[in-house]
Amino acid sequence: MSEILVVGSLAYDSIETPSGKVDRALGGSANYFSLAASLFSKVRVVGVVGEDYDQKDYDLLNNRGVDLAGLSKVPGKTFHWAGSYEGDLNEAKTLKTDLNVFADFNPQLPEHFKDSSFVFLANIAPELQLQVLEQVKSPKFVGMDTMNFWISIKKDKLIDVLKKVDLVLINEGEAKMLTGAANAISAAPLITAMGPKAVVIKRGEYGFAMYTKDEGYFILPAMPIPTVVDPTGAGDTFAGGFFGYLAAQKEVPTIANLKQACIMGSMMASHTIQDFSVKALAKVTLGDLEKRLTEYKKVITV
Image 1 (spheres, one colour):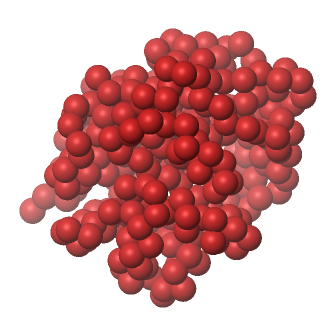
Image 2 (cartoon, rainbow, N blue to C red; image 1 turned 30 degrees about the horizontal axis):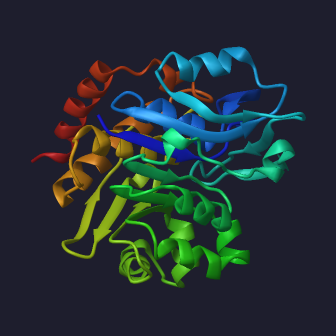
Image 3 (cartoon, rainbow, N blue to C red; image 1 turned 90 degrees about the vertical axis):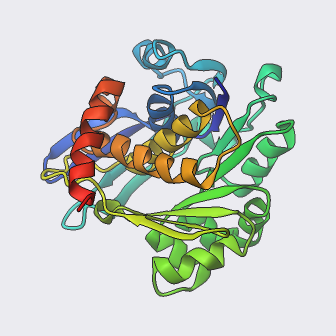
């Protein structure tokens, strides 16, 4: 089984949606990614938390076999984000961001992390993503995420990262912002022209659009979920399911692997959005995924 290295945030979120609200619920890209990916493969986490990080939240990942040797606990408070969703559940309104200990995050990989076969650079500053890549020896496959903030203030540095990765996962608004394109379809080939072999554009309730230089587009809808409770972390869950599936195949990813990984990422994300925080995700089993995949095939098959 190939190991997956993820570098990203571990956080506490305060979230309000039409379904209710929670305060200081477990969040962060590395948590969502790891809980999803660890169903399939071994996961290694590099991140930082404060003194307020609860033991039960360590235990959640430990119990899934996640290697936390790269997780640092330092004086101060853990990264905290507060946001709300109103009419459009595809778009969060940020109410407050307290970087806290994450402001001084300096990703240093334990020696045994440097041989990781798969690497996912979650949404952190581009220079930190580059710093991680400099420490990894010879990964089989590298993917990254980003956000509008980095696109607006560090686009040149972000493009430097794009040149070094195999895949970028990005939402539709960010894809249009990065390229100046009018929609996901026209943005996708412009992104691969910047370096990566493939791009997956996440489209929320409308599913995803993957584009590869070799075979073009692969587009599917999302699993229909009547009630979306909390979409926070859906993109990171998608990435976790995607990378977890790829790593479990024990080979250099093929186009067919990438297509199946997209579907698995989508199935994982469809569970996450059904409850606040990581509650639903933490309960998902491989059996649950197989059942949902069967339901999904009825949706997309003639």
